[in-house]
Image (cartoon, rainbow, N blue to C red):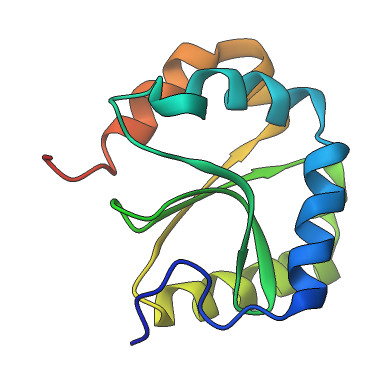
Length: 123
């Protein structure tokens, strides 16, 4: 599978990512403060990162790890089906996808970071 950081993302996906970075949720902002600038395990994470047809909430290329944060919009059946398809496509790129509820990040960010660590390669 293609191993560049963007997996053929179009200019429109890059534009969507830029807009999403400018409008991050409180949970995304909190997690980003821990992940940005190699603050977490010395790894470079990208926020609102274009991957194929999608924008991942957070992506670490070295670890091939996508982190998604889900708010209440993800409770609908249609959105859950979309999320399953999206996860399948990302896994086809050879990526690992982990999901957290916004509430998890806001209420127990340290536990979320510990769980993320379990998905990181021994670098």
